[in-house]
Structures are given as structure tokens and as C-alpha cells.
Amino acid sequence: MDILTMKPVLASVVFSLIGIVILLTAYFIIEKFTPENTWNQISKNNNVALAIVFAAFIIGISMIISAAIHG
Image 1 (cartoon, one colour):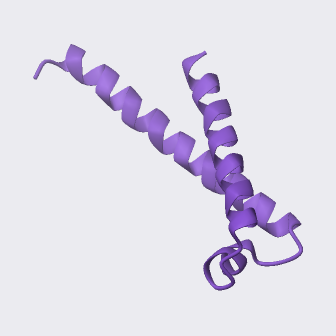
Image 2: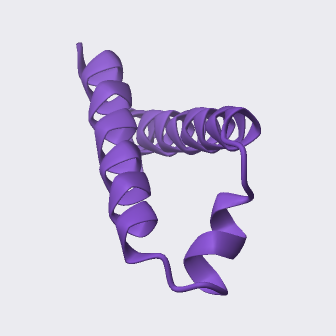
């Protein structure tokens, strides 16, 4: 493969990794601000409402990261 075709692939991988790191950082920040351990509430207590809220949070942060990367 030519080096010119590898540049977009490498950029895509780098931006994906940066996006995942930012998403995980945002999740851990929100986890610190909530009064209870959200993962235990979702997995052990089957709190569906909290799972829906965190799913919306992850989708929202992902859309913001995507918009920031793509411009």
C-alpha cells in the first residue's frame, strides 16, 4: 500500500482512539459527581431508568466528539 492511502487510515485510528479516551474521561467525571455508583445500580439492581439516562449521555457525548473531529 502506498503511503498516501495509509495517511487517512492512520488519522481515522488516531481520532477514534482520542474520541474513546475523551468519552471514557467524561464518563468517569460524571461517575464522580453522582451520589451512587451508577454501574452497580445498572448491573446489580437492574435500574433501567438510569441505564437509559447513561445511554443518552454516551450518545450525546459521542455526537459532540464526532462533530468536533469532523469540524
